Length: 157
Length: 246
Image (tube, rainbow over all chains, first blue to last red; front, side):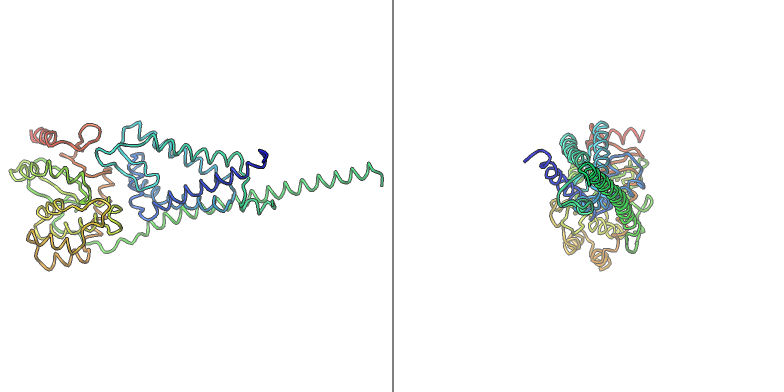
């Protein structure tokens, strides 16, 4: 298989992976918006009333992004938004780390303050988010994928 | 038709085709982008609406609660010590084991006013039975009968494992009985979850005060932590209280 033929498949895998990431991340938070608000608030970057709105909106945005990536609608734009969000998340984790906060990142859970004696795992969280950022990067660079609504609408076969 | 002319026509057709295809791509890109933005906007709006419209149920505030109705006070000493706890939180239990007695003594001898704030931030750790909320609501019912401390202590002594289903309502009533909470009112309040909405509200106030975890210990309005954000030792706690008492 030539390089030109391989890329759409690589991008398709990246799209599916990123879709799964968003669906899982959002799905795990959507059931308890109060906990999601507390997870955002634990970063101590905004007052609670703002964290409450962010915490409520975020899981729904994540699920919507997951669905859009899954069906492959405007892949380049959804990849760009994913990359933007991942960058914000990474910045948030770095800032929590730098300030010595003892929190769970709340990436795939309701997060919040860690129980005393539990180690933070900011390094792993950042590396993982960088991986997701890389998936978004692949899609930004090569947004053409198989089995996508984009492809159907563009008239590709 | 000469060969040259045929070539030109073919080329012209190709150019037109290419332009058409490019037009189509532009149109599709524009409309899919608009759709994506709209979908994300609506998703965000749904989240906001769900949050704003959360049905919180009927609010019954325990009459004995102090400090914006978030706490139950023990003693009347000049130094105020606030303890924010979740009955599901093992670290809170450790804190109670190590410092509980000292605090109770300081409250009894008139040094401190000990204010217990039950909050529910670990509802997710009880298999969907919301033990944190149920137990805190039961504690409010106990407070209404003047037995908060007794019930508080027996709850920690019987603390369920994190990520178990917690104690059932029947068990909570039973534990209440063991410390003298034998009234029908208490049992009914536990069964019906009378104070659950109040617990949610008190937890909101806890967050609004910029606290995140349990136990949070506050001495005279100042949050007290050990090194690296750890729970303060009994020694540090006693020293801080003595200093505040002057």
